[in-house]
Length: 210
Image (cartoon, rainbow, N blue to C red; front, side, top):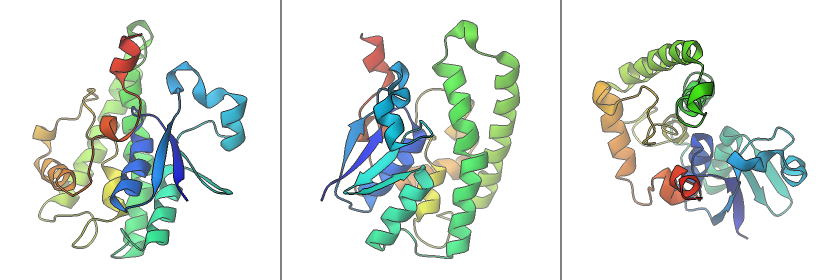
């Protein structure tokens, strides 16, 4: 049975789930959510996820929301991506939700997807400082190691990389974080890796053309 992931290409949280599905060899297909035209606020979508957020994973009668939950389901069902200290893997998943994607996603959205006259400069500056501090933590952790946990890629890596391949600027530069840069290159070199705009439908250029 093919699972479906309700997602859109601009979402790093959706990308974390989609990349986990892809690299775990799961049978899945994307379902585009028109986020920028209110797709997560429709009655149909809210029936899938009352939180009004993507991604949403469906497989038969099963519906899962929140990217970390989807990642864990895929890993446990396939027996992949959990090799290592489970508590340490979970520690980084939770870190990412609060300090990584939780900050990077909001910052990138405000800096790129809000109309320029609605971008709150003071909030952006404050959040950018927090996001860069968190990335400095990840940089120090990755210094001298190939992966976040243990000696191979795990869910921790696929969670923490979610927003770091996107071209839209939010203050992050790979050149400023050499250990993160090396780590992102290692993930991208894995068989089956795809850029978020190639893995999921939806990209800013689609909206620019309409």
